[in-house]
Image (cartoon, rainbow, N blue to C red):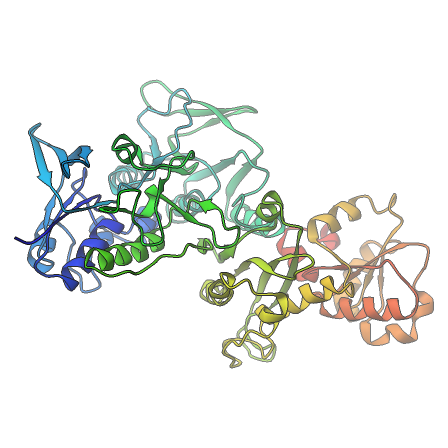
Length: 571
């Protein structure tokens, strides 16, 4: 008699594991169980379904050859059984049985030889009054997405409030504001958007992009209640009340591990099912993966939670292989991500500067801005790149990028992300071999340049200042006895010099050696150019001439203006 494998959960990991197993062991009997009628869909595509970029929800369930992944598909094409609208009530490990309650109320007991737990995650419960009102949603499944799409399609939503400025929150903000013209407000308790995954300077650029597209962003604010007479009508925060027809709660998710815990499987204090590198739980006959498990963070070496669809699919393949007798391993993750925010793509991997410091690393970040293609190529745009580096060792702990060419940003982050598990240094990334042609990159790619900038900082050759600190110093320029030395050509610098003649001086970098006598030695010098390259050269010239203490603006005016700060336009 062939063995029987039961899979609990039918969104990402469950179907992947089942399909992989059946390809390797066609005679194995597989039964997949899920509480929803809608299974095997791309959950990360939900914001694009709501926006209308994806016209029908069934497209999120289709294969690349346009077949809908439903019960008949898996039976006919993959040769395993699927039971939908069925709730798994318990796991009896001793007798190797699973008790399932069907939608009819009937209970069914399934015997298993091997079991896969792919129960996913649930939205974090804010426990605030009114979150159960019609019109308040947490985007965690396709059913909720269909309801939201119906509301906006009917014109029932004029004002929306999104609670949380993480990936889904910002994608939903774009979907509602851009495609439907809905008055959209994002509320975030932290002091920046994308908290924990990018540094404050890159977050500031992302925030300006949201605001440029008429999304209001409220930081350092939290929701106390959702109010309304029978439906959502307003949101009350610790600072104000905001009218709303739709509220989307996007404050993160927690692993669905109750079933595993009740069965006596090892679960971490934060709630994730504990698994080894083969994705086996504390019971060797039970595997688990996806949003319900914890895995190793390959940067910190500590257990971590990465609820990402791409990771669930990769883990599912490994589980399917091992169910068929293999010994594949999933070593851990560095947490690679990408998110689209209107005209910008933001991507990253590893630790942000904030998370690195919280983890106890003595870390700093190097930030640059550079053309994504060769400077002489007619089609090009600036891309911002940030490396997070450990002092002393020079180890690269994380990378983040932002630019209008989202594919280019993602590709560059991916190149660095692939090396992070091997603990690369800035020298390794500075010499990282990436493909070059003028339509795609510069001869010295932004990846290499960022690492070289970090190496200069480590060596003490570069003394940088980031845009936020620059803005703080500029706002207190009189008290700081500040002088901005603009090393660009006259045409670029002239508007700034005219606007602030006492605090902004122009000496092009090519003339600086001959005009050192014009540089005051009793003022705090801030060096700027378009991207930071010429101003760095100018810093070296000043140091060689004995003029110490000048600071160089990381990313130059290109990054500063994208951050929303332009001294030439001050009122």
